[in-house]
Image (tube, rainbow, N blue to C red; front, side):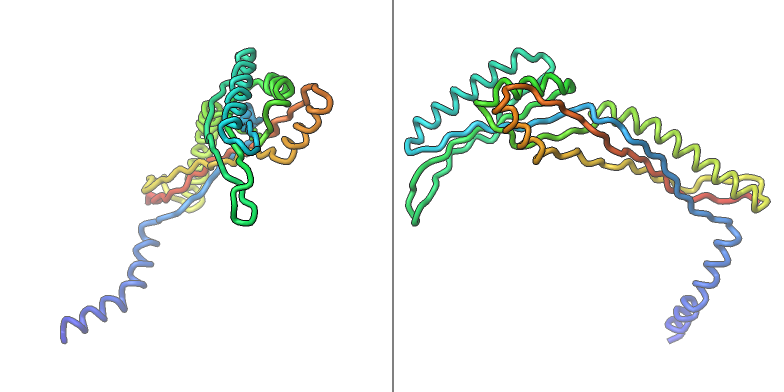
Length: 229
């Protein structure tokens, strides 16, 4: 019973005691950030080669030939990297029965030369359809930008800490904890515009202008400091 009363007494006193300790310790939590809009310098395009009909073996042969032509064409563009993925053969049903087959092959293209991608798509528009296009900031550029932003955010954190310690007539401060977060920016999707460009290229057989846009990159610095006496 005595142990229970002692425990209740401890909990009753702890919140006030803890608040007083915080005031005496001079603990302060800070949050700073730095951000900038960065031009997208990388473009990822996904193409699909597909055929539909009654004979899956014949369709497979046709898709393979078209894919080979696309891969041959990309060799003329040294700034474009290409790889194949997601090959599939799917039955198409009608009233519960297989009416036909659809064979498809996806290709993923990556480049930092938008004009080359535009010309390449115009060249192979009769062989493949555009599934999606995404403009993004390349990994190496994003890391470089984040490094610069981190320096800015840390500088802001230190300035805030100095200001607070000065305004409270303290001699300085000590860092108790720090956490750093860099945002995961979203690539700029171009699905609808890609489909429009595909149709336009099929009619004109000419490359379309591609504008990459930009993404915001930010870095946040959070932490707590202890004000010196």
